Image 1 (cartoon, helix red, strand yellow):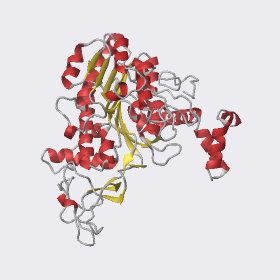
Image 2 (cartoon, one colour):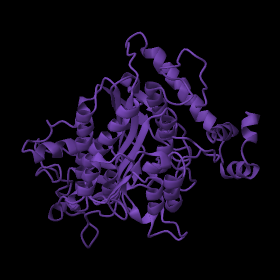
Image 3 (cartoon, rainbow, N blue to C red):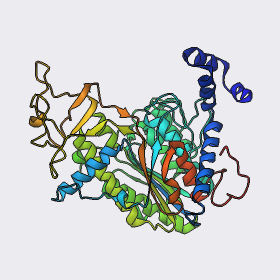
Image 4 (cartoon, rainbow, N blue to C red):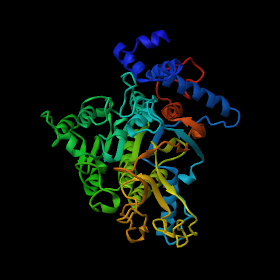
Length: 480
């Protein structure tokens, strides 16, 4: 313990001790949590426990040649349920009987999402957990709580000779995709994150890069760098796309694929031009490119695919946007299922954190999920909607501050009522779902720490320096 404490800067330690009015036992625990070794060792212990628990009941000896990780940013369980109903209602049914693509996955678990300093996390500390296996401070990407560099599972994959890719509907420099390749203490350093993507490993070695955020690579920069020009120079055989047509034209290109489809985040699907790719289009292009590369070298691939604007719809408390983005994510999951073989490809679907959306009342079956049931009224007889937020911009109040029916303003793109008035919708801290199919997918059942996820994927695909399917009988390095 003393050796671990000496690894921390003295001033930083003093600041933490003075700031925390908690018992000394908790201060010691906090100090341990600042170190990568704490979380990597913890995850390896939990991995060994899972292996021991399942070895007699499930005999899966398959190694994952490929890994596809799909992340629905802000994808709460309520979002899953409401999106399922909306999917069914769009097809003319009552909705409740519909099925999302993830419901066909054979194994399901729950992930605990907290940061080392916050009960309810942000997308930066969670990305460091599910990519790097280390929990860290809120707002930190690719670093431990003490500032150590944390390598992501995509870097593990590159060291194993696998092709790699990142796909998102947000800016490529946003917190979630940044966790795949960047190392910054503050997620807002997006110009630095863009530089790392183009100039440093593992970013510069990615075979597929698709998303938004062109401005961070050129127009918004003040350092004189034209990162797009640098990328072109470093990838003379690469293909650059700015539209769906150009993305499709890149299908025969032999080099790296880069697509930047907006200056900032990509548009919500409900508001997007048909000239731009949907998430399922980008997922298909990525898998096609990576599969071709895999056939050339035989090493397989690892790709991260994010439906990032589910979270944005929730932050705006516009549930119509959030649910439509979830159905876009559902279409991408379906695309991945159709294009991969579960005999050699591990597919993992999860979320980084939850949101405060609730589905409440006793609406009759078939009630429009974006509307209200006639019998849903409060004690004053005022109707209320099925879907509401705990915190958000709009409380559905009249000029005297009394709650009024939201029926006049309900539409697919309108604000959804919330209980507490806030500047925007906020995250919530409950566990999120993990779905898995393919080799070693049985290991993803039950409740787990979020930072266990890359270790499970690494185990299945024989990535990293720790315990894997290929070395489980040897003395692997427990610190990753």
